[in-house]
Length: 276
Ligand SMILES: Nc1nc(=O)c2c([nH]1)NC[C@@H]1CN(c3ccc(C(=O)N[C@@H](CCC(=O)O)C(=O)O)cc3)C=[N+]21
Ligand SMILES: [Mg+2]
Image (cartoon, rainbow, N blue to C red; front, side):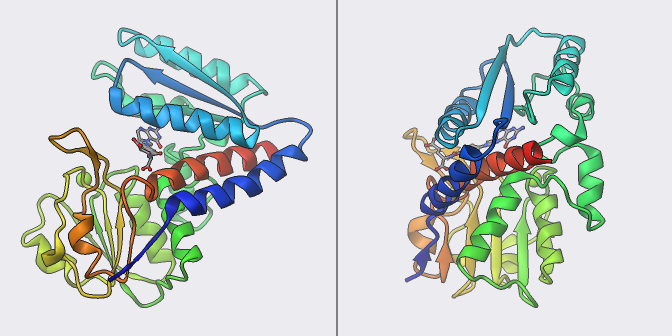
C-alpha cells in the first residue's frame, strides 16, 4: 500500500510562503495569461490560476481573444506586454488554433517574461546548466521529489511522453539529478517492459488509465501528469490510481497531484522575475 503524494497540500504550503513574500514587496508581481478561443479544458486551468494569483497577492490579468484572431495580432499583443512593466510574466495558453504558428508565438515572448520556460532561449539555458525559467510541470514534480525525500541519484527514471512542455524538460531535470533516464513514447515497443524497470515512473501521454499495475515495479515512485475525461466525465490520470497505489511506494493522485504544483511553480517564477 503506497503513500499518496499530496500535491494539493504541498502547493498550499508553498503558496502560503509566497503570499508572505509578496506582502513584503512594494511593487506587486504581475502575470498576464492570454487565451485564444474556447478550449474547455483550458478554462479550469485558467480559473485555478486566477484564484491562486489572488490568494498570493499577484496582480493577474486574463486576455481572452476570439478563435479568429490573426497570428500578427497575437504577436503585437505580446509585444505590448513585453514592454509593460506591470507584468513580469506572460503566458500564452496552449494549444493554439491551427492557423496560428505556436513556435512563432513562443519566440515573440520576451525570454525574461517567459514564466512557462518554453522560449528556445530558456530551453537552451536549461539544457546547458544555466536554467532561469523552468517549465512549470517538471519543476513542480522536482519540488514533490524534494518534499517527499525522493533521491534520484543512481535511480532508473522512466519518462513516458516526449513533449516539449513535459517529457523533454522532465528528462533533463532528472538527468541533472543523477538519475539514469529512459524516455519512452508512443512508438516504444513493449512499453510495459520498459516501465517495469523504473524506480521512478513519470507519465505524460494523455491516455486515460494507460498505466495499470502490470506496468509498475513494486515499490516504484509513480507521478501522473495526465488529465483526461473518463466516459462518465470524470477527471482521470494516465495512471490507474486505484490499481497502481497498491504496488507503488509513492504515487500522485489526479486531481490533487501534479496540477496544483504546476500552478504553484508558475506563481513562483512570476515572483522571482518581479524580484529581479
Ligand atoms: N502555456 C501553457 N502553460 C501551461 O502550463 C498549460 C497550458 N499552456 N495549457 C494547458 C495545460 C494544462 N495545465 C494545467 C495545470 C494545472 C491544472 C490543475 O490545477 N488541475 C487541478 C484541478 C483540476 C480540476 O479539478 O479539473 C488538479 O489536478 O488537481 C490543470 C491544468 C497547464 N497547462
Ligand atoms: Mg508524447
